[in-house]
Length: 155
Image (cartoon, rainbow, N blue to C red; front, side, top):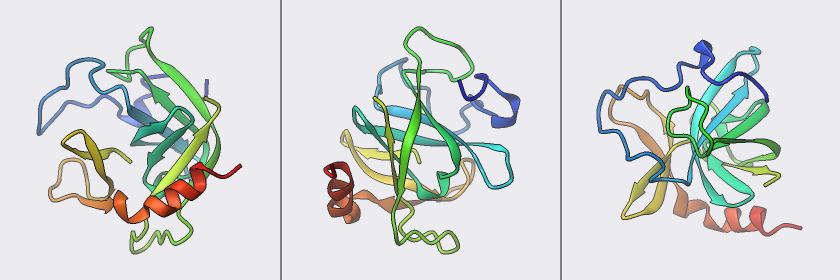
């Protein structure tokens, strides 16, 4: 494991301020992304599974020792369904600009950014904004479909 679950530095599993708690395990595609940033501290992001070996998140969630946690309802509790998958290779979009936030999208390939979902289809990835501040700014996934297919279909 990269770290212990429920590390207080992550503030994972905070109380929901706006919204309602999802029925446990009703969204199995949701992922918890954790990584070490340039300041050598653990950071967290949301993401989602797009294929059994690829997760999608925001490019600003890139770092070293990236891990993807799947099958968790509450990241603070170890659950039988929880699995942690180390990332073998991260694919931040080549035009990502950390200052402007443009092209803030990344694919993570494992050995096996939280989505905006409308009508059960992922439409965007959170790129700017704070969880307790509205409005959030999203990267539109449909803009990057050719790039996504190129990365996921590469040998």
